[in-house]
Length: 187
Image (tube, rainbow, N blue to C red; front, side, top):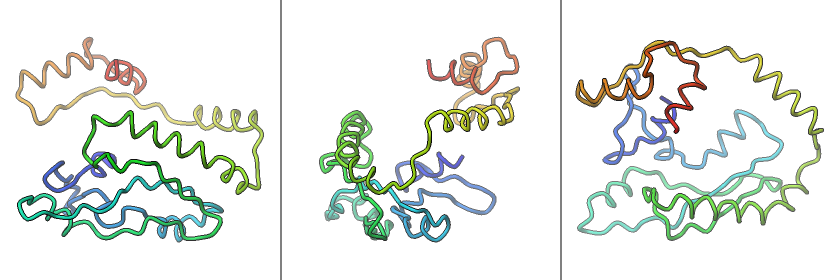
C-alpha cells in the first residue's frame, strides 16, 4: 500500500484511502526530504540522488501543467551538510511519467554514481568486513517470519477477469509463500 500511495499523483494515479486519510505521493509536499532524514535518523552521511529537471513552465492550454505547478511544492534539491553527497544523473530529456525511458534513466543513474564513487569512498570512515556483512544479512533473513498467502482478492476488474487473474497467480488454489507468488507473478 505504501508503494502504491507513493505513486499517487492527481489525474495520473488515484490516491489511496486509509481510514479518513487520502494518501498521495509525498513528493507533492516534500520531494527531497533530507531535512526529515537528518532530524529523524541523524545519519553520518546522506547520499542523495536528484533526478529532477527544471520545473515545467505551465502553458495556457495545458490544464495538467497548470495543476502540477499549483499542487507541487517547490523543492530545493540539495544536501544539508558538507559531508553529504548529491548524485545528479543527466535526465533532462526524461519526464516524470515517461515510463518507456526507464532503461535510459537507470543507465544515467549508474554512470553518475560511478563518477561519484571516489568521493563516496573518501567520505566513509568505517568499512565493514564482507564476510561479517554476509553473516549479518543471513541472520536477518533467517529471523524473518514466513508470509503465507491463502487468499487472493482482485479489485477493479469484472468477475471473469478476476477469476482469470486468481487462476494465473494461484492455479492450484493452495497456500503460497511470498517467494512462490513472486516467481509466478514476475515470470
